[in-house]
Image (cartoon, rainbow, N blue to C red):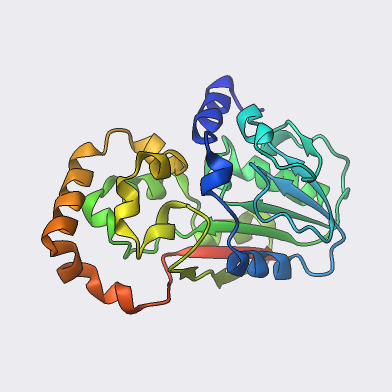
Length: 248
């Protein structure tokens, strides 16, 4: 089970989460396609309910009471539990999904094993490839790269833990509605907003980022950011390393 320390972390990140982490329909389309014809779906680390398909029978698992309280009326039924100890029989679901959550688990291998145990069909995971480089915010906050290296599985790890998988890039649109770390790549001033950062777990993990954000604020004011990264403003989507893992 997830420790009380981890519960507290989820509960802190969960403040205002539903308002800032609204599912992006373009990303949702990729996730739902990965589920194939599955009718019963388990959503592990479900949070406030992002990306749960509304045309299927979904059961959610979430360890944080704060997240559970933000699930909207009519959302899928939710069980308060952790990925590492799913309270379901073997082969209970047609498919299982997990969205931007595996890096929060205490034991990723055990969590994925549990997903494999309870699913008789595909497992669909939206995650991040730590080998990918190129997000401009890491030039200001290099600790972001160190954090990903420490907590994110390598892409090759998924095949080792789940068997054969397909790995598909998930391009991030410039107006992405889901406020995860790279969502504001074309809206740099958003990272200066403490409410935006509050819904991004990386900032909780790193701690005080006031100094690098002061540099970002200055660069935006002087036009230096535009001189260095302005070409991005002409792009509609970018690949920042988000990947959809789909077991075969």
